Length: 85
Image (tube, rainbow, N blue to C red; front, side, top):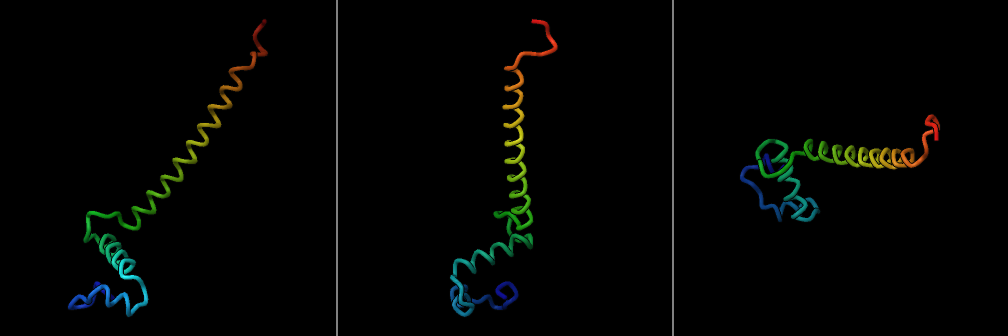
């Protein structure tokens, strides 16, 4: 509504009419501008989603690496049954 209105309404007044906090509306407007390529100072919604997915994948891989390290250390500490003593 805000982006298509001419002249641009006052955000505070529009927020009151919609029943939301003016800073929430301001944030939504900024995000819509970023998604439309009109802002370079914010990530788009798609970029935010990709970043979150990459953080989750990184955490999963870190956990898997820790399991592998622990298992490797456990096997390294045990005597090799194929070696003569």
